[in-house]
Image (cartoon, rainbow, N blue to C red; front, side):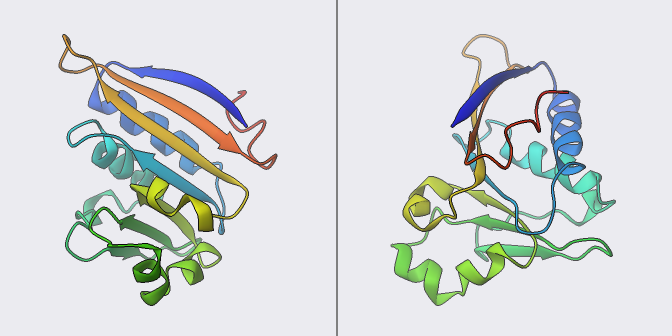
Length: 152
């Protein structure tokens, strides 16, 4: 596991960081998004989708568990699994089948950490207690696949 920290000073910086990361990912890649409400996960997702010209399609998956975004190059699946009772519910919606069908962004993905493939990225978001626009992103990579993805 490798990790690094990124400090975002604005929503646009968070979105640019996400768009840049999206440009380096491929079908089968998984990103876990972790953090409190309002910590930047939605802006990150919006920026991620911007790389694929899908930023105007974004909607919160809170009540649908997963939103699917179709692109010519790759499908993107945005999950919010906070409301799932257990891993069995994730299996019941065919969650694992999404892993190999596109790029998965999974909010609260730590809840299913035991069934995640060995290689994925986890981004933990934290708001600054004193400065409204500052977000701290701790980026962790699991497995070797993403070792050099953040080096340039």
